[in-house]
Image (cartoon, rainbow, N blue to C red):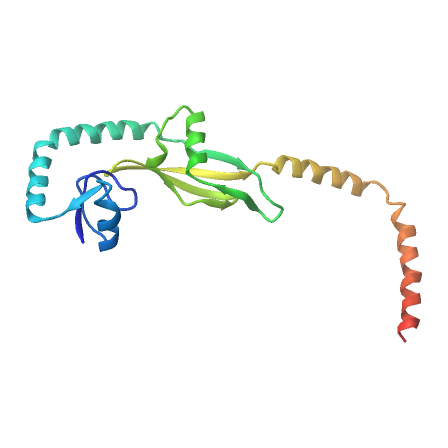
Length: 188
């Protein structure tokens, strides 16, 4: 089914785009909610006339989007999250956390124009901010372990313990040896 979008639909297209969708998606969701109309020949003519009349407005919107995109130059987000011992996150890092981190840096964006594959492990990811159909900014996102400094402190404490002479472990090892010898005759 060929339709004309009346507003931006992330993952599908932008306002005034002509796209093909499955019949059920168009008929049951996009058209009833007012996000699209059927792309009939008369609707295409109306769209072409509207685009011709709005060309200067669209150029101004694109210029404004490019100005907003310049604010993202050189920005890298670092988001701390709770991590298990295996490196898996408790939960995930998604769009909401990215928008919140951008707000902390003084950049306000709407949540609906940001897309990102949810991060479920520690590592590097990318969030895309869609300002205009021709202006998109990719923001690098680094997910780090929130409790990493605690683990490093524990590792340092463990290395200090290992450097001290171990006096208590020797008697424990001797006690285990006779138990092992007693079990051997019982099994035979």
